[in-house]
Image 1 (cartoon, helix red, strand yellow):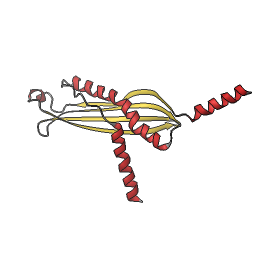
Image 2 (cartoon, rainbow, N blue to C red; image 1 turned 30 degrees about the horizontal axis):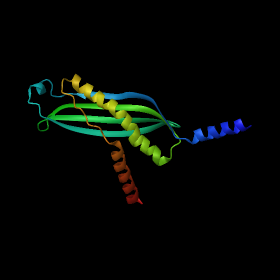
Image 3 (cartoon, helix red, strand yellow; image 1 turned 120 degrees about the horizontal axis):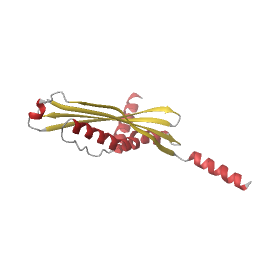
Image 4 (tube, rainbow, N blue to C red; image 1 turned 45 degrees about the horizontal axis):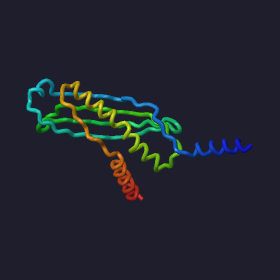
Length: 162
């Protein structure tokens, strides 16, 4: 009887504990375009890099979420002449249970993209190298700070509509 109570308490404690596991990481979409090739290889190399970063998530079923990190690197040489565009949508499926709404939003908006970023950065570098350009060597991204900014904007917008 005592063993049964301990087992029930252990099961209840495990059920209330937050659970997080990575199910799969995959490339959802990859694109590379070099509209000025091959003439771009004859020009003086003075790259200007514009990196756009975006995340989104979708609930697949109860406790299962797909998170997609999109990196879009547009490189110009000199003025406005686009040298190349490399875009990667790196995705992951995550099992997440037992989190409150705010913690779940933070996990999906910052923690999961932080896991996906190294894979996306490697994919961007591989695309750029295959296009015969020097690697971009993207710096790490502080997804916690980006998430905090997005939450602040969301709070301000909600206060503005109220």
